Image 1 (cartoon, helix red, strand yellow):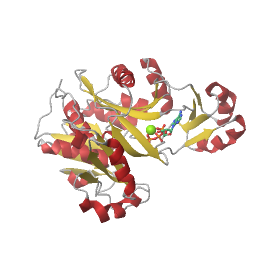
Image 2 (spheres, helix red, strand yellow; image 1 turned 45 degrees about the vertical axis):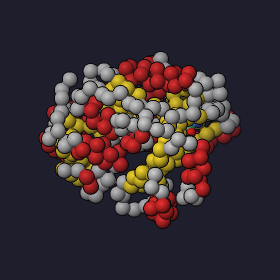
Image 3 (tube, rainbow, N blue to C red; image 1 turned 60 degrees about the vertical axis):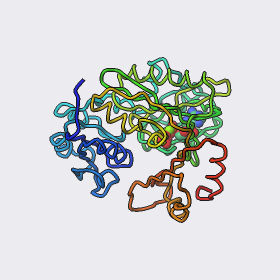
Image 4 (cartoon, protein in one colour; image 1 turned 180 degrees about the vertical axis):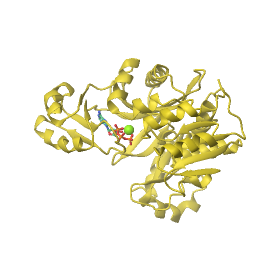
Length: 372
Ligand code: ATP
Ligand code: MG
């Protein structure tokens, strides 16, 4: 296992909030940060030592990042696979490029989850709308049709309740091929963040229960309000997937919990995840510190939760009302990512609250009306 030490430079592809929080964690220990992002003033650019301002797939810029960095990581999965692969030939990319290839395509992602032995919803893949029409009964109704590439926050998805709705999925094919998967009547959504170093040592963070509003993560509650059997199954599935993919770094595994306490894997993200932000305050090792340990080839720390916590996302429309009351809540750990423009629905920051009474704190959050 190659060890990267403080004083050396960690190169991050992508300058968003995940890169920023990774960078901040690394800088505490004295690492230097280089970031590649198309904008100068990106959230990570603001805290980086070296900024390379260029598109993510710009070959010269990737080479430049490789030259100034002792190790390369990334903060999002929609980077150019060929570019990352080429970079891994000239620079040290311990995570490799394969995981990005697999997870940026919902079809390969699902087939790899299945190959690992973890449970997924019944699904079919279709290159064209006609192919979908021919196959859709295999997924059954209701189902959700999703573009195989580029979806996020529920974009590029259509729910079909019955065969007569199928035309609603036609326009998705303008973007890419699609998959159709059975609609899962889940009782809860949870996520397991698993992190693994090049020696194969891995740990899961405490499992988060995720509440979405308009398909965007709204709150994560930790520990998830599920029984020990669900936790055991979820951690086992995450480990199975991580080992199968020979993970290095971080993998977030989004799951559905069914009425009978079985779990089904929804999707993967090969990077720190919004639902793991609570770990910055609430754990002895945050997802960002652990990610840096993993890619720098350090032994991992066994995660421990200091206190139950709730993380609430701050979207563009929440920033102004939050600022009005922020000083009245000494127990809130407020994170704002330094994004210039508070566009509606844009993730601008988050708040973590450690609490010994989850239900009461959930009510307190609602009663502020910031998130109403
Ligand atoms: P994100 O990037 O924000 O995680 P995404 O656009 O990649 O989202 P998914 O996670 O696949 O999309 O789906 C978004 C949400 O839609 C899920 O969190 C879940 O609430 C719902 N959903 C997705 N697939 C299914 C399904 N098969 N059955 C029921 N609900 C689903
Ligand atoms: Mg998702």
